[in-house]
Length: 109
Image (tube, rainbow, N blue to C red; front, top):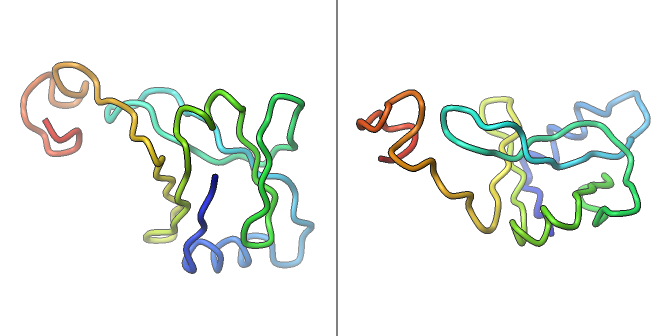
């Protein structure tokens, strides 16, 4: 389900330094100009979640989302966590809200 890069593992270690490691939920964030994307939040697993240990952390994701994305790569770029789904989400038809169907470079259209 989840692969954690070395950079992300170091960032997680720094984040949890001096505090208890709680559960981390991977969830589908609301649409942005680039369309839907995965995000992280501190949360404990529920009955309908898939749970996996990686990089010393417990990650959970709703079963339906896990089935949709297949796998997740967690990286850290410029001090921000970046989640890449194994099966990418489709881009909005006609481009993102930022380019309104033109070519802005952020949505690839």
